[in-house]
Length: 324
Image 1 (cartoon, rainbow, N blue to C red):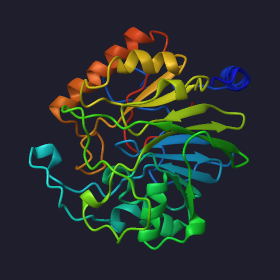
Image 2 (image 1 turned 45 degrees about the horizontal axis):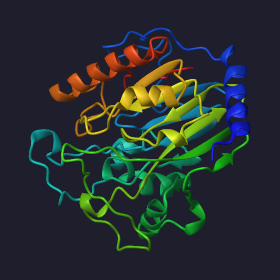
Image 3 (image 1 turned 90 degrees about the vertical axis):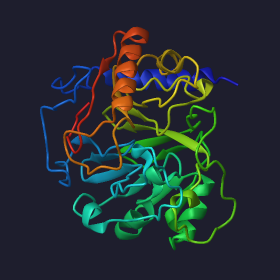
Image 4 (image 1 turned 135 degrees about the vertical axis):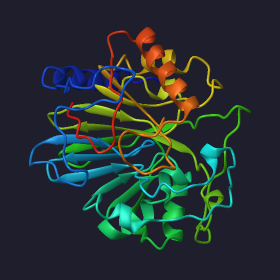
């Protein structure tokens, strides 16, 4: 049942912060990668008190809130599975590349996992072990974390509906849906209800149910993060984020994806497309984009402009610090 009090609280907090929340205007031109007014080294910490958001490709983000760091779906190893060459191999061995990860991840206190496909979860156990970060995710993420040797106390299973208080920021967990392929299905469906053997290949990492997250920074913006291009709009009512990180749809299987999403999120001030890059290429600018994905990105931008004309679209570049 819809809770009107919850809606009013969320809306009030969003509107109260609106006057203070500013977006770097450089790069707010849709259709080309953005260049923010402030660019920092990819692994550098934000100054004390500052809040910055850096895109790490796919649906991955590094959020620095003062001297505290939150990661969303950090997939940095980015190895070849044949997916972008039309020769996808589901037996591709899982690979972690410390030489790529370590310079970028100096710290983390929370890792938010939207779902457990390899391009979202692959590097999570390594990063959690290295930094001691808490892994927030589905029950599948919990059991996969155990399979990688992480202690249960470092794993926080959630379902959606939780609002987690970390002092300087809160994380609201939203039950969500994974996108569908052209056959109205998905790769590697399924969940893990008990600890499996340690995963060895990409097909050992199932979708495992899908979540979205909204981070609300104390005195700062509220930002919504998606990891896949489908959603239950009833679960989004009242979130009303300032900024929405929106996954680009790979197919048209989900009806009226953008209009329903913009309406459910109450037309965010800023929309940032994600999950449109070729995530099997190095994490260097400019992002590599397959021709089909370029068309889908353009279609997403056009659909946002039509459904939510007052929203600004920011097409991000890797490692660039954005301030909202």
